[in-house]
Length: 145
Image 1: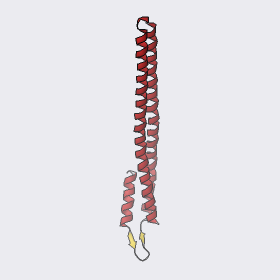
Image 2: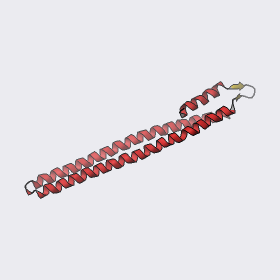
Image 3: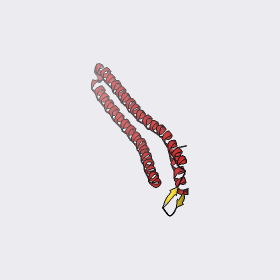
Image 4: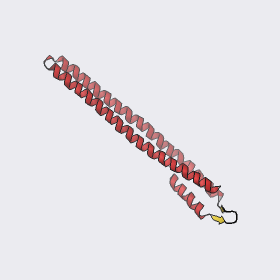
């Protein structure tokens, strides 16, 4: 069962709890509530593992993008050296190599930017879920008091 489902279950129990009007309190099964809270605790590590995995995946994607960019730049530089050695087309080779390097750098920057945006969206979504969960837990605890 997911955390949000457990929280929905807790809310339902709170809503259905027997009210004692004189003292404005509700009567609920303490063991059931504690079991639901324990279920939430058991689910949290999985959510944290997913967040950690996404962080590692983000680092991996950025590293791969940087390696690819370096590889492209190195290939462009090697191509430039080769063309310079061919004395008939030295000027054109230099211009073309420079253009390739600039293009590779732009591609690498764009890939990195897109990767960072994607990771940020994923992490923001997780943050929103956790913030929502925390607010729900605070409300539930407040209702219990």
